[in-house]
Length: 345
Image (cartoon, rainbow, N blue to C red):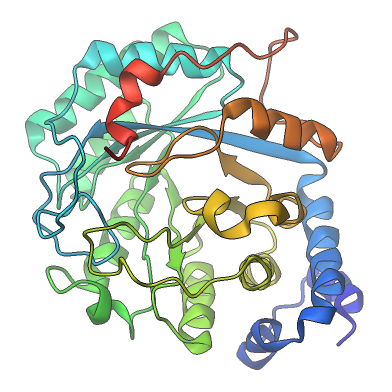
């Protein structure tokens, strides 16, 4: 396969078929650099050398009744993490201000649980309204579980720019990962936020025992849903979860998966998300030739690398941080007091 030729066709509007997409996952490792080069041609055409930075604040930790096999926040998991209800409005607001100082373009307010209560929605709404008043040119993403169209409308009115709810895996593999909700529940939430005009964000977790066909299904499902942002997570197995012994990814495999999502969804934001450091390891730089977005700092219950390493990585690649109105150098992160809950004890 001439990957550069295929990339040029994709740039001109060609849509990959399923068999072409599946071939990406089955190529020999010796061909991966050519595959990545083609993916970069697509990324460069639509996003240039820009990199979007995102930061998570773990606004409500643990206490989740769902049985998702990958998640340390499930009540079914035997993990040693901090568990607490929704943090205060002021803590959320202060986190946003610190994030802005550090060139973060999108601030992700993430809550554990099946669905938010109306009181929790109101607290987030109040925080978002204050952030929008006090922090200019700053995007807010909410990730709050299953929401109704009415709740989504209120979040939109408050100023929430984006809502994340991952499909996580394929419809076929879903029951192997969780049994307490259905794949359609996730799709319905995405449709609810789209109806009210919030930018939809939905992604996947790879490395959970899925097949190549499942990964292709995920890429095409997100294309059909027409989401704006696709976080690609790679399983970071957590002790005490159902998938604690699942460790089947390699850095090369991760590059193939990222490339698949770029070729199938060429115009969309592709974000290397949870498990980036654990799975890509020394090939993180090649990942950014495919994806145009990353999380900075820690994830929900696993650690990320030091923020200064991410900034250095971007600089070394000759890339530029998007949506940064500040000319001064980035400041050291001051969010440790807000995100201690992200650390596994």
